[in-house]
Image 1 (tube, rainbow, N blue to C red):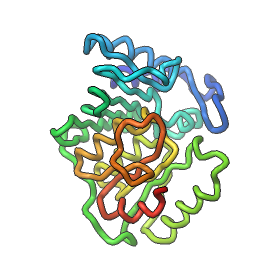
Image 2 (tube, rainbow, N blue to C red):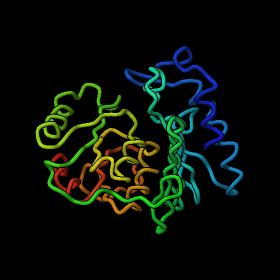
Image 3 (cartoon, rainbow, N blue to C red):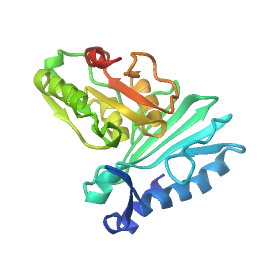
Length: 245
């Protein structure tokens, strides 16, 4: 992943992108990172396959071992030179997330987790923030392309957070913001318009950091192809469950 991240700096995404939909970009960086990692990851586990956002890999079946990759989570940020984009990678064993890794090349921060072995940032143990009054929390929220034409319900969530906490943050990379929830920079993060490659790695990292991850029905997150997540310390997640449906 660190080797692949060099591509972030080798190509100019500002002049090398396409629009897949409103607020939905893809760049040559996405393609090159995915190609590099597919070539190398599939060598690590014989018979494994890749489920990924680009190049027709988004509908791959889950096999005995499946890598789940977002080559650039935060492509819109990358196109605009807002340096908050990451590579997000998970490994699924029979539809269960057993490994998660998210790398932020702009800060050289590598978040990782192996099932039942805890979560780490650059090799050091991390944990979610302790429970506290909701009024004392810092909460992240997603407003990405999947929420286009859903402004009323989106701003209902944002207004509640704005009115009832220490602050609202919106970075534009769900994977990175899940990492921030895992190490206590956020108390919780909510986004109900995600794909599996957006949240698979972050789900394990938050869990292994002692946090709670639920979907927008209030259930334990599994490996839904599309859906939403609320994650962070237990108390903050319980407050944000008011938005489940």
